[in-house]
Length: 313
Ligand SMILES: [Zn+2]
Image (cartoon, rainbow, N blue to C red; front, side, top):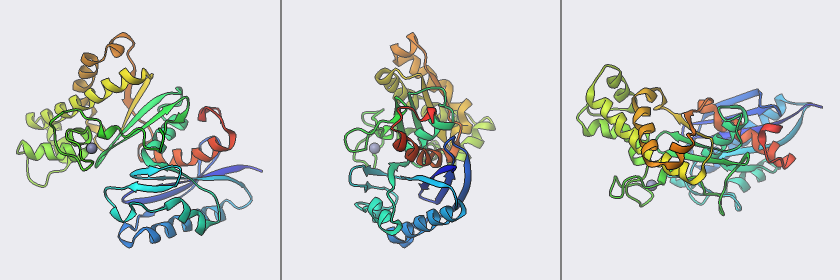
């Protein structure tokens, strides 16, 4: 009998779920809004309803398991969201146990950026490697590290918080308590903030800054150079630590690649002897917003086989 897994990607705006084949083909998908304003109970209710709907649609096939990607810091062993900046009502919420209780099934919980990195490794830009780092540029910056084909978790599941690497000792204050975090200098939010700072306009978004850069606006282009330098500083550190073959970037600012990548690569080159000696690939990711969904669906297959490489499934 054919088998499948279910992946769920809980985002701040959208809640999506998919039934996925062992080879990484999406068979059925469901998507809707995340009802954050209604509290954790309502969100879990929607997640469980999506999973049950997919099981109904996939009747007759064997469900291998369920993987769930959620934002914020999570404690893997207890399945608790330790901190989700945009949704404080979820802080300390035992999301895994709540889903399992309502569903009557085990689920595997994962941080959304980690899941996205695994998705890229499984069916995306990282298919041909076993070691990679993914940075997702959005409101903040998420990070995921794949080592030996598997997510690097650290002791509590909080490894890979690359958005909170210090890239400027006295830089912009961050919600995490630090100053000069990468995400305060290179996220979509940071691009918009820098655009306002150089008087490009009030109420500006990162997309507005990008459009101005396309039109040839020097200050808008300078914003992306500054953002690229911040990314390059972080990437040089990552290359020095890991010596991995591949570093991927994804998220809303990626269309501005030509504006920020030259400064980024120059900075990596300047700051990393390892990179100059053995250049790694620093590239856009391929799966966009779907990466986390693929990664969540990959988790049960990895767990079932104990495989050291998702690519061998
Ligand atoms: Zn921070």
